[in-house]
Length: 312
Image (cartoon, rainbow, N blue to C red; front, side, top):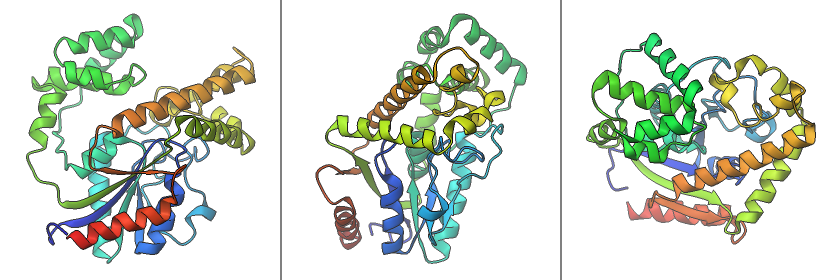
């Protein structure tokens, strides 16, 4: 490894339905590893179907961490996640096991790998409610335009659906006088404690990935997704209520549309989400991409990991 004092960290990233779970469990068995979630929805209890959390059967005897430990209505920041992830990685490593960070939430992954430092800005509930009311009045797209007036970089990166992060960008600026972009630059001044190798799972033929997404949604419905979504009606916009897989079914549950229409919308939104994930991860040149439609991903992954270890 480049620095013997650094903690080895294997990351497995990629879009939803690409096969990260299967690869991570297979590699954990081969490499004496333990898996740590880097998925912003798999952290919540009560939504294993929508979040595609690994089942008890899939986990087998492989230890899994930071899965399904939060109540669905609990607010949980990126800073909260990073603190827990660092602690968990160290605990896994201290037991002589390889920490394997797995998930499709790029912000979580990069914040951990790059050792982003988060400042503790005071929370102002009144100001947040004012921002939320403004967003309700003018819409997320207009709020993004307003954000771009003082932080173009953050505005370009955020999607209009990500209300929480848009509001947070305004909060950080007005509470600290610095944009999130400026804070991110300052926060990267402390070197990462990890010697990281990153693997990316996807399909060269994008349509094959989309087919897998459509089939996964059908399977989720067979497994009880609709019943799970009914339990989250009161959570819309909060915590787990932001999850793709629940909110798209709520119009059907409330009688506003047919089930077929809601399901097609869910498939479309999931495909769009996968596209956004790929856009995020494709910016990171450290990722070694594995294309499931072109190779034996487990075999190739083991070769890459061995090469990485031998170069150290």
